[in-house]
Length: 159
Image 1 (cartoon, one colour):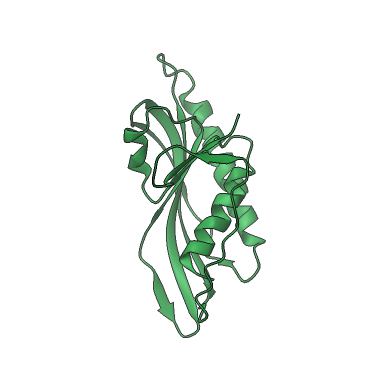
Image 2 (image 1 turned 135 degrees about the horizontal axis):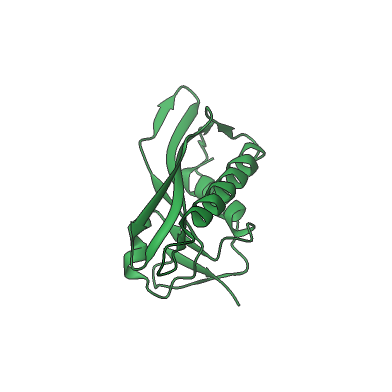
């Protein structure tokens, strides 16, 4: 499995979560340049990857972000939904063939101002897969989502 295939498999799990209305690829800070994004937003970024024998380990950071109300009274609710969404995605990832999800991940709640005042949670996960010597680039699609920007880094659930 390649990095591309792995990230598309994770996005496929995220798109099936009813709380996810947008997917942000490879840089959570792209939310700052996307004021039309629909919340809750799922995002992923890369960490450090490593190879050992016939296995490759991909370190990824997974995020779920929601907008806060002006009073911020929904902060803990947004963090709670974020934690539940990330747990569901991690549990789904454990069922993907040839994927070994590393040790239990810490999930960290946060509040942060992107283009909007937001709250959510993130987790660091290390996923180990067999090295893909064939470099097959076939990836699953994301039916039900459309491209928000021109380089396909932000995908929005279709109405």
